[in-house]
Image 1 (cartoon, rainbow, N blue to C red):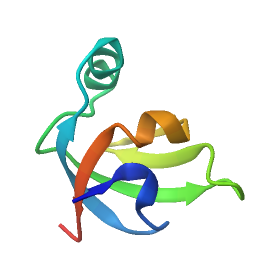
Image 2 (image 1 turned 180 degrees about the vertical axis):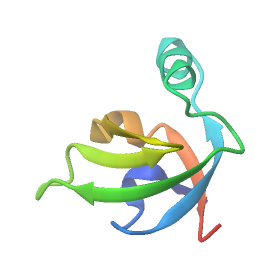
Image 3 (image 1 turned 30 degrees about the vertical axis):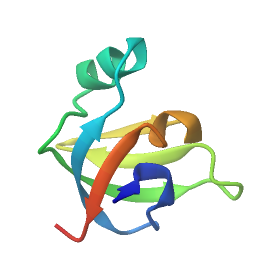
Length: 75
Protein backbone atom coordinates (compact mmCIF):
# COMPACT_ATOMS: atom_id res chain seq x y z
CA UNK A 1 0.00 0.00 0.00
CA UNK A 2 1.21 3.49 -0.86
CA UNK A 3 0.89 6.78 0.95
CA UNK A 4 -0.46 9.86 -0.77
CA UNK A 5 2.95 11.55 -0.98
CA UNK A 6 4.25 8.62 -3.11
CA UNK A 7 1.62 8.92 -5.85
CA UNK A 8 2.46 10.55 -9.20
CA UNK A 9 0.74 13.66 -10.52
CA UNK A 10 -2.32 12.82 -12.60
CA UNK A 11 -3.05 9.54 -10.79
CA UNK A 12 -6.33 8.79 -9.05
CA UNK A 13 -6.43 6.94 -5.76
CA UNK A 14 -8.82 5.68 -3.09
CA UNK A 15 -8.13 6.54 0.53
CA UNK A 16 -7.77 3.40 2.66
CA UNK A 17 -6.61 4.77 6.01
CA UNK A 18 -5.84 8.09 7.67
CA UNK A 19 -3.36 8.12 10.55
CA UNK A 20 -4.71 8.53 14.06
CA UNK A 21 -4.37 11.58 16.26
CA UNK A 22 -5.12 15.28 15.90
CA UNK A 23 -3.98 15.34 12.28
CA UNK A 24 -6.48 12.61 11.37
CA UNK A 25 -9.33 14.71 12.74
CA UNK A 26 -8.17 17.72 10.70
CA UNK A 27 -7.85 15.67 7.49
CA UNK A 28 -11.27 14.08 8.00
CA UNK A 29 -12.83 17.51 8.43
CA UNK A 30 -11.28 18.46 5.08
CA UNK A 31 -13.05 15.51 3.42
CA UNK A 32 -10.24 12.95 3.46
CA UNK A 33 -11.63 9.70 4.85
CA UNK A 34 -11.49 5.99 3.93
CA UNK A 35 -13.38 5.23 0.73
CA UNK A 36 -13.01 8.73 -0.70
CA UNK A 37 -11.65 8.94 -4.24
CA UNK A 38 -9.06 11.64 -4.93
CA UNK A 39 -6.84 12.75 -7.80
CA UNK A 40 -3.31 14.15 -7.60
CA UNK A 41 -3.35 17.39 -9.60
CA UNK A 42 0.27 18.45 -9.20
CA UNK A 43 3.26 18.51 -6.88
CA UNK A 44 5.69 21.35 -6.29
CA UNK A 45 9.20 20.71 -7.66
CA UNK A 46 10.49 19.31 -4.35
CA UNK A 47 7.26 17.41 -3.67
CA UNK A 48 5.88 19.89 -1.13
CA UNK A 49 3.06 20.96 -1.26
CA UNK A 50 0.79 18.55 -3.11
CA UNK A 51 -2.48 19.67 -4.72
CA UNK A 52 -5.28 17.11 -4.83
CA UNK A 53 -8.83 17.11 -6.12
CA UNK A 54 -11.34 16.02 -3.50
CA UNK A 55 -14.88 15.98 -4.86
CA UNK A 56 -15.47 19.40 -6.39
CA UNK A 57 -12.63 21.30 -4.74
CA UNK A 58 -8.84 21.48 -4.71
CA UNK A 59 -6.91 20.90 -1.51
CA UNK A 60 -3.23 21.56 -0.86
CA UNK A 61 -1.39 19.33 1.61
CA UNK A 62 2.10 19.36 3.04
CA UNK A 63 4.20 16.32 2.21
CA UNK A 64 4.17 15.22 5.88
CA UNK A 65 0.36 15.38 5.93
CA UNK A 66 0.10 13.41 2.68
CA UNK A 67 2.45 10.77 4.13
CA UNK A 68 -0.13 10.00 6.82
CA UNK A 69 -2.78 8.93 4.28
CA UNK A 70 -2.67 5.37 2.92
CA UNK A 71 -4.15 4.92 -0.56
CA UNK A 72 -4.58 2.43 -3.36
CA UNK A 73 -3.81 3.72 -6.85
CA UNK A 74 -5.88 3.44 -9.99
CA UNK A 75 -9.42 3.41 -8.68
